[in-house]
Image 1 (cartoon, one colour):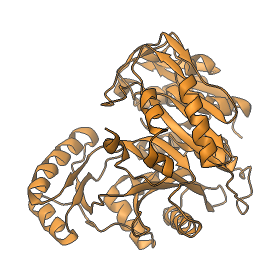
Image 2 (cartoon, one colour; image 1 turned 180 degrees about the vertical axis):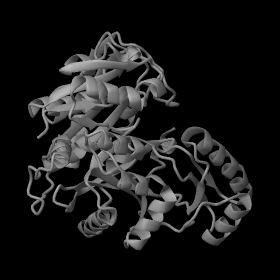
Image 3 (cartoon, rainbow, N blue to C red; image 1 turned 30 degrees about the vertical axis):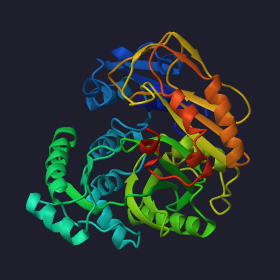
Image 4 (cartoon, helix red, strand yellow; image 1 turned 45 degrees about the horizontal axis):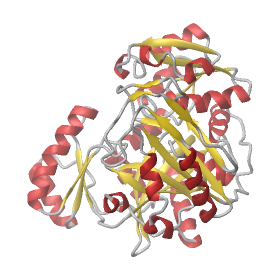
Length: 445
């Protein structure tokens, strides 16, 4: 194992990585913006370096500043967390060329999975199910209309270089497609610097299920179960659970096998997630995308499989064997994660502000991965995630009961937060039944 690690991220994920690094005796180095100087991840690191002002482009996405921080502190490895530069192939390549260890998949795998059209084509060639859709970008509106006619309405219009639920629109007919195509293309050019658009079949009632994979140092790819991610607002996740209440033993076997094939197709190393859409009516599933990084929702997998995924990431990067037996992975119990955001619980609009009260829940099966403490200020410069509330139990019912109690105990005053939404969700008959889909939040509102 290397002896020093720079964490190129902020907030709760930086604290999460620092915690495991220090437990393993690895010196943890934080980088931070001027706006984040007082946050817990900065003080909990063994060393911290300011890399620029609040604007992420000048700090957390500033490659030269981050590499300079690594050089000045003698860091041997870099963990990118999620978001920011975590899926930037050029950054991964630059880190490796600088003689540092990159804690993540290789740049080639990131590149292969970064373009949704290329990823779809690769997965289809590897025998992974993909939804009906274009095999190359729709070059213009006429091409999009022709493609949609062949696929059948409704269709999803997606930015080929997008991610995180951004750059997508649904068209029920040609008139809608003409509107959505221009909107998505303009958004993609502005946000991703790439206006390429793909057209896919849209499933009105669908579940979002993903599989955690880990590419080991010896070349094997293993799957650590699935996560249900269908509670979403604006195509972005709010709640995740494992195992999925929609997945039978037979379907799980097919999911995991497909995810392993996906990883093997790109010689995947380190942690990654294969995201899929599941049609609950037919039990068919289709590849959506591969996230070539650690996911926000990784803690539910950690609970169910009894592994520390960050430790496994570090071990793979160091060329070491995993702490678990890859041939004896056995899930136990049930885990649920609630993303506590600084946003109002009705319209989910951001609500930053100074934290006057912050009291985290405790108890059996309760874990809080937070980015803030009382007295901190939530600024408008970054993602609205305040904390992840993770609960586990022997059964889904027990996990839900613990989640209700934990939500009631969690006290946050100052910034707006979505805890009232979770209190409502945990009493919702549709959610409690386990028979829900990606439209559940819209139906609640």
